[in-house]
Image (cartoon, rainbow, N blue to C red):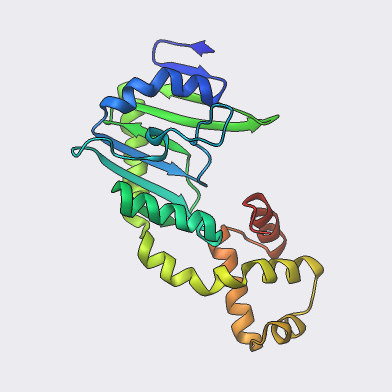
Length: 220
């Protein structure tokens, strides 16, 4: 653990949850941006995830907003979990195809920034410096305004979600578009449109990068 006057760096999810559990218990405004479901799913040696970490409002006065990268919805299991969090726990969820900084903001007073994962372990910076918190909050608000409501994006991506594993496999094999389209029972133009939609959802600039990101998300 490392500390400055306004920044604390913790070296594991378990330590982060221990240090911030009381803050989640009293927060009335929680904003979160994450690439997937697991960035802030702090585990304690089991598959159990604390409800505060996944965004369950434990009081009626809690507002929870969450932004996820679009690629998350390509996984049917992840898409289901997002819908559950929205419908059962009252979280307001939006989706973006843009790059995001993985962040939690509590009551516009404290920011948690996720660092890179190294050797399976991730560090987190806990920031309380007002100007820094204000800056991160402003970035979140900008991302929030440009993101798409979960239900709207889920409908938009439903078809490509079903095809994604097969398309990624075909791309990985280097199969020509005409052959790939025929194997999926699609026209070439439709197949190419699906590939473009898949790349957009994954935030990929190339077909190769799309394959890499799909595998990182566990889609294939």
